[in-house]
Length: 54
Image (cartoon, rainbow, N blue to C red; front, top):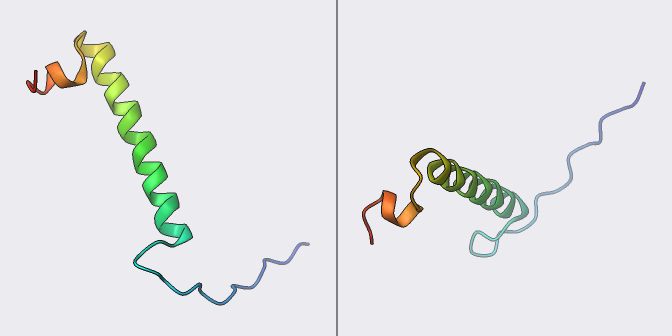
């Protein structure tokens, strides 16, 4: 049986730039990109036309 690793000491935060914050930001960016593609495929318009920005 393998043993789970013990938590290490937290890294000091420098203006919010932590490994966890960057991972969350990347995941949210991937979701936004996927939603933009889905909107374009379902509506037949670009995202800016769909939001009436152009």
